[in-house]
Amino acid sequence: MEASTKLLLQLSAELEAELHENILPFWINQMSDTERGGFYGRMLNDGTVIPDAPRGAVLNARILWTFSAAYNSTGKEEYLQQARKSFGYFLSSFIDKEFGGVFWSVSSGGKMLNNRKQIYAQAFAIYALSEFYKASQDTDAIMHAVDLYNLIEKYAFDNGNNGYIEALARDWTELDDLRLSPKDANEPKSMNTHLHLLEAYTNLFDVWKDHELKKQLQNLIKLHLETILDSGTGHFRLFFDIDWNSKSEKYSYGHDIEGAWLVRRAAEVLDNQDLINKSGHKALEMARVTLSEGTAEDGSLFNEGFAGRVTDTDRHWWPQAEAIIGCIDAYAISKDEKFLNAALKTWEFVKQKMRHPSGEWWWLVNRDYEPDLSQDLAGEWKCPYHNARMCLEIMKRTTDLIDTIPLSVFNSKN
Image (cartoon, rainbow, N blue to C red; front, side, top):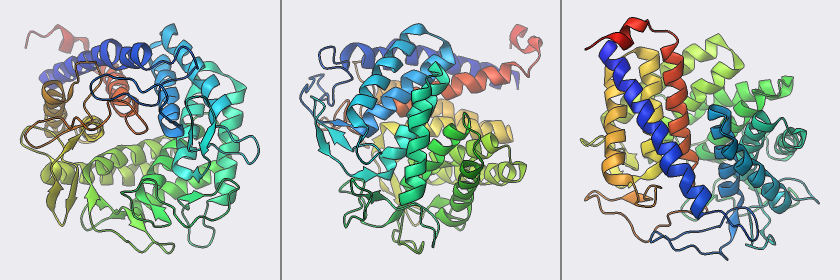
């Protein structure tokens, strides 16, 4: 146990340095738009900024969440300043003042481009605004977060079949094309949107103890454990029709390991012991399946699989970050050192293969460890949320552990 504790402390120290010396300075120094406000919408992998690129609600919400969470964790005033800047830009650019909700994208000058109400984007706005409220106690932040929650519940919740519809038009009427991205199935419900709604509602409930929100968050936990999760395989199903019939066969290793710890976090925030126990059991099961099926010998996490075999061997940046959190979460539950060792091995892979010279991470490397130079270093989907959150999560979890172990561990020479 002493050796394991020291390894965890070393991991935490390295991730703290990664956060403060690499990830956050990249976004502050290289992606801030000092002329028009906010952050640039795109940077190529060679470091070229595209100043006139469209700006997405998801990217900007994730930036707002990241700097708010970094301040809440460290108390560094610089991060609160960045969060305040991001908050002001987000409200002025993405809030639909006529119909409510947030636009999908705006131009670099702040003009609305895509006005659809993708529920995934509304969820990330709630996640970010509630985190900023924790940092600033700004009542505008919690007011807008609650407004978004009420709009989602009014227009997107499926009262007949349970769950949430993927997307709606600007005025919250039905759409024919519900897809989050062109690669997704055009189905009315998805694991991805439900997972990030759960994440958002968890963060909102942490600061707003509303009875109806509590009920809906509990419902989301049960949906993940009983409907979205395939108990026979230990994987989340990805897409569903309106009646929750599965419409996909492949699975995403990154979403599996991310969802495993997020569902358990939601149960803990609700303080529901029955759901804590159930989600903890499932988190361990999913972590074991992820390690046995989706992890390479070098510790990296593959992208996708089907029927117990890997179908996409690319290593994307965000599954590596989520694998580290998910494995440390499984270690906290079980005290099984194989999960700690898996997290350490994934971090070693990131250090050796995923780091970009700028301080950020490559979007992906292939099976030969070659980075995909066609993918952006920063953009609509490439953001600081996954890797910065991984650093913050491990820092917090290590601090919590220190409070429970004897001083003799730190004084040991072993």
